[in-house]
Length: 544
Image (cartoon, rainbow, N blue to C red; front, side, top):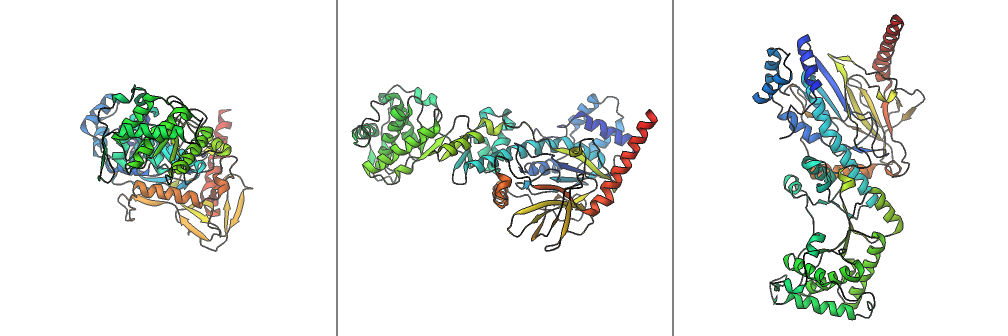
């Protein structure tokens, strides 16, 4: 596996050694993993990567060859340190997390990791690596689902454009979790049970010269009751009928025979799942008529063609014209349902192009999306961070002149408060020992750094966000990891529960986040902030 204890930054080992050297390596530390700003200029993120983090710590153990490598990488470290590394695992680490597939917001911890400081420090980089991209691509997929709409099929076609094989596998997994319906990635289909879809390329179409290349022309009917010895002739007959149809007369002339041969050959190979790429030569004058001839021949044999794929050109116009052609076929030849034959569009689609298609009007049923989805072209990274908030039960804070980078100290509990309409109102953080918010009880929620940002909330439903997924040596009950399909369902449910104005693409309404209770503010945040600020100012005066 690629994700081993060595998949980390060198300074994690340097710090672990310094902790060990100082005798601090067993100090009990609490770290928050969170992000500071939602991606893609939006107001929500979908959390992904939790299962991979838990599987990582479940198998966290240094092998002998890894220790030997570290000796060469850290030649000045004492032998006792490497003996310590050989002995450690994550049995004394606790992990609390928001369920994977949940809608999440800035500053609220996605994960809280507690344990011996040296061990938890070694988890920082792999956890960030596992969560950052997973959450980013899941969010990207969810945004594509929102703009496409619930009825449309979304197909992930990004493997060839992903950042390497591991990026391609992760993209397929988390695109599915974010609301896509299927992937072209066969390996991901086997690993995660994701439905796999695909048809043929332009190369397949252009590899044929004519119908005489088809050797085996026979096709049995779908129920096996009869057999057509010359399916090619059946296709040719249907093409003649289409060319002579009164409602289609003049819309096309002679179609490309090599394309017709390719479609016929593909239908003979896959009569139950015939879907043709129709833009190799000319969509409306060749591709669509050739597809219809093959589809009608299949219909005679009891099969139903899946549809077509458009991979170039004016997708709005071509999809509308194709739908008209299909409807004309249904009316002309009485083939019930032919007008609703599936139209798939691809060709470097993204959130913006789908939004533009919606505004223009189109007849696309399925979108095949690759490059812009898996590379997260609109935003390169999510920017999760991993910050120390408590050590040996003493709160810790990270200060900055940029208030967005100031951390919230102490081990926390986090809640989502819902209003009477069922929408979430605010996410609030409390101290570990504070009582939880109560339904119907008025609560003052305040921004940790901006005094004027405060509001009273009376929740109609209270949801505690963090659950224990790795209890370590504690007695806390462990949550079972849900399946990928369960995480996908959670993602869809969560987005349905959000207020539409929080989800919209353009100028979404900000969700109230980074709220804390008065006690958390007065007990931990203000004293720590004042104390450290005063020490910093005193140090500056001494330097002067």
